[in-house]
Structure formats: structure tokens, C-alpha cells
View 1 (cartoon, rainbow, N blue to C red):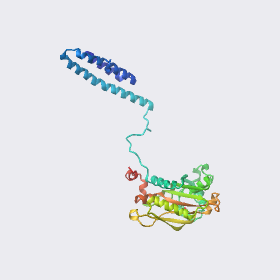
View 2: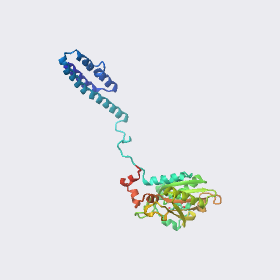
View 3: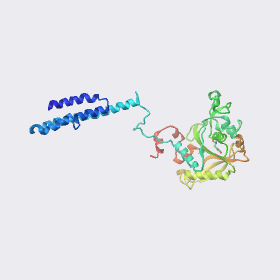
View 4: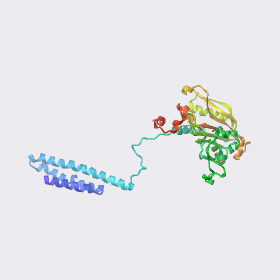
Length: 348
Ligand code: DAH
């Protein structure tokens, strides 16, 4: 009995680590521990043995079994790993998701942009985008801001050497290129592409020569809104703003317009809002953005007849809204990628 058991053990130890397929492992294990296997056959002999020998024989068989079973499991696992490695090629597939990796979250600025876009999507607006790199004509001239206009001073930005940009980026290829100082340039691109009527929201980055401090960044985000159609009036603009601020800050939010000046709108306004649930800033007028009725010159610059079409536009600072909504005291938090800050907006 003992010799037979040792033979079976030796066979298992030599065959199982060399099996090539799961089928081979199954055949070897059936040969040993299956209903017609060699070890099973020995177990069947036990009742025929002398009573005094039975316990020792049973014990030996069980010991053998407990050594053979892990060998079978290991053989299956080894073959599975080999097959997986083969399917992946020589090296592991590093694009596979790591099941242990902590989940990232959306950036608070992305969340704010999405929230505002969702609010306006409900009113039939679509999202338009354009490149951060823009020409002087799209960023200023077409927006009724000629080269000698003082409004350009407040929007100084990085100008690019002409040669660095491919001539086919714009039809105004002989223009100076710059990092756009506001998203208002998307108004021009969208109107040239789609004509009128048009209802768009254009979120994106803007760049300015600004000294960085708690409320200024040389690189920030805006959302531009443009609505052009026949018979669009100032009351439509006011209604859109009331809708926006009630959606953002609740039904108690109030909105007011103060006369202002932008070259691309006439009349132009600063928008203030007031909300009952803004902590220390509750129930105080807060200046939030610029808006107005699109200047007839802007419509003419994109080939639209100002006697037929009219419209409104506004430009909203995304950081400013996010800072107000979440009581964030320093704009630099948005750009330092500190997960302790970012994690707070995960909603998890
Ligand atoms: N582009 C302006 C800025 O960055 C903001 C702005 C004001 C946009 C009035 C508009 C507008 O569309 O109508 O300062």
C-alpha cells in the first residue's frame, strides 16, 4: 500500500507541473482522484484490509490526497497565467484599468462649466468651442475693438511670433496670433460658421497679462453666451440672467443690471446678483459679469444685417462663480492639483 501511494505521489509531482493545458491537468487528476483513479482504487481496498491496518491506510491515502490537491490547483492557475501572458504579448498591458486605483473626480471648474451649460441647454442653447490660440481679428477687430481702442489695454495677452502658426489655421492668415484674452472670440467664429439664428454657450480658457494673486490668474476660464435672432430684446437678456441666477443660487436670487461699456455690446451692462444663502456674502449685491445687446457693428462684421437681427451676449468668469458657490478664498487652489482640495468636490 505504502509503495503504491508513494508511486502515485511521485507521478503527480512529476506530471502536474509539466502539464501544458487545462485538459491535461483534468486528465491527470481524473487518473488519480477521479472515480476510476488510482488513489480512489486504493481507497476502495481499505474495507478488504485487516481491521487493524485500516486506520493507517486511510491516513496515508488522505495525506497523499492533501498533497496532490494543491498541485492540481497550482497547475490550473499556472496555465491560466501563461495563457493570459500569451494573450497580452511579451509585456503586461499597462492600459488595463488598475482595480486598486482610487477613482479620480471631476475638477470643480469642470463641474461649474457643466452645471451652467446644463442650465442653458434646457433653454435650447448648444455648446460651441474654438481654439485657445486666436488671431487678433477674431479676438478684437471683429468684436468692434480696433487696434487703437483703449479697451485692448485691459486685455493684454501673449502674442505669438507669426511664423509659429500654420497659415491654414484661419482665413486671416496674415494676422498676429495670440492666446485669446476672452471667449468672446467664439461669438465671431460661431456666427461665421452657423449664421443666424444662433443660441450658443462657449466655455473655455482665456489668458491675460495679470499678476497672480488670490483673485487673479493669467490663465482662467470663461463661459460666453450668445443669442441672435429676429426681435431679441433686452428683456430677453434680463430673463435669461434671472433664470441663470435662480438656477445657480435658488429662487430667492435677485439680479440687477448696471450701465457699463464693452466695445462689442450696445447697450452694455455689469450684472450684479444677490442671494440669501451665500454665507458672509448673503443679501449683498455681488458684481459677477458683463453683458449687453450685441453691437450692430459686430453683426455687420460677420455678414448679418443688424436691421433684421439682434441679440444678446454675456461673458461669465467660471472661477468667480465656483469661488462664490463653494466659498473658495483663493483662485490658486484651482490650479495646484492638491487632492485634499479637489477631493471636496467629488460628491462622494
Ligand atoms: N469679454 C468680456 C471680458 O472678458 C466679458 C463680456 C462682457 C462678454 C460683455 C460679453 C459681453 O459677451 O456681452 O471682459
